[in-house]
Amino acid sequence: MGEMIELTASDGHKFHAYAAGDEKAERALVVVQEIFGVNQHMREIADHLASFGYRVLSPAVFDRAERNVELDYTPDGIKKGLELRAAIAESNVMLDIEATAANLSPRPTGIIGYCWGGTIAWWGATRSKSFKAAIGWYGGGIVQTKEAPIACPVQLHFGALDKGIPLTDVEAIKTSQPEIPVFIYEGADHGFGCDARASFNAEANKLAEDRSLAFFAEHLV
Image (cartoon, helix red, strand yellow):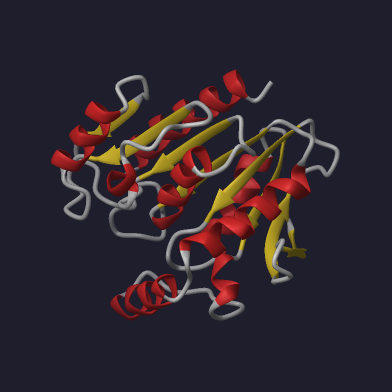
């Protein structure tokens, strides 16, 4: 099990991050939350990824709007999460991501995110030079900056049944970034990697996880 630590961004903002894994691990990951905060599910993901030999930090990016946010996967949770997301400037999100990466330096560090975090992981590849690899799981905002130049290898994962991220958006990303491996999971919906959601798809989650771990193993050297 990990613990909550406090980090400081370059603008002086102090925020929490869930820390898991050996502090002396040779490789590191930044795990970025969904719109539900660094809740039990995100902590479990961080612990799980740490078990593969990574030092893992999951920054509480909602701390800029409200601290100690842990939302449920309900309509009310979605509504509150969207409100919090809208209250935080993208540039400030990146200040927190950069501070998290700096805490893990000089280890080779990757970034992986889910839902909103999947989009932020994309920003980690396109708005930062702190990462050696980036992976986004069902990041709905990626298409908005699909032509942005990337600074590190990227891998993306989407569910074929995800109504919030239509396959036309996924195809547009693939067309704009033909060198990026983009995986589409048949029968999988948004949030297929979250066992706290009704949309959890064990088969798609396992395959996407295996691909993600192999990608990091290849590039975080």
